[in-house]
Length: 261
View 1: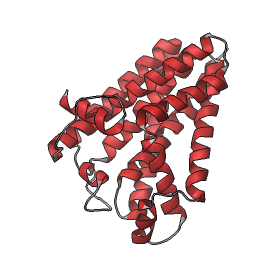
View 2: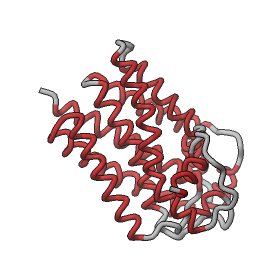
View 3: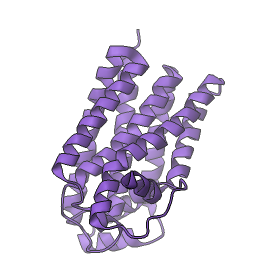
């Protein structure tokens, strides 16, 4: 429970009791809870989308408001990480200089482009899902938010940190392999369960398959950035969350469209 409270305090703006000191053990527990924080955030945002769709507001409006809820609940933390990572990689400079660019508080053209494209892809995928039903869109957002964070949990088995200090360095190497395996299995079961609620056996198989594929895409992205920057940072973790989430939403939208009679 302390790990979940710590994760909520670190990765959302939800009011929870503060944790005075976070050591490596508690960091590992918080990282193990990270996917379930995503499931909570995604479920709350999905409920908004579902409600808008039920009121006849349309899928696009529901998607926009749901993504706004995710950004508000997380303080846009992962979107900021995506933008910083895009600026660093887009500079095409060696790792030390790219990391220096990522530390700056401003945002460059590559960061802006990454944010616009990520939100556009998420919004379009959710709008498409809403056409097949508000429940499908809401469920996909909950699973997508969980899946993106689960990829980060799996990634933190790695011990390569691009910096010796900072927020990201606290979590690099904090996840045990057994924890990663159990987390991955649990996320897959939840994904299939949500898919079953949305569209029966076909939905369960499709959501599970989309989760596996999106997890692979997120992992490949993380591996690429790790090689490029000679390690991981907190910003990179944020970019993995966004890439994993967007990948799942796109695959779920295509899968749901294929399942329609």
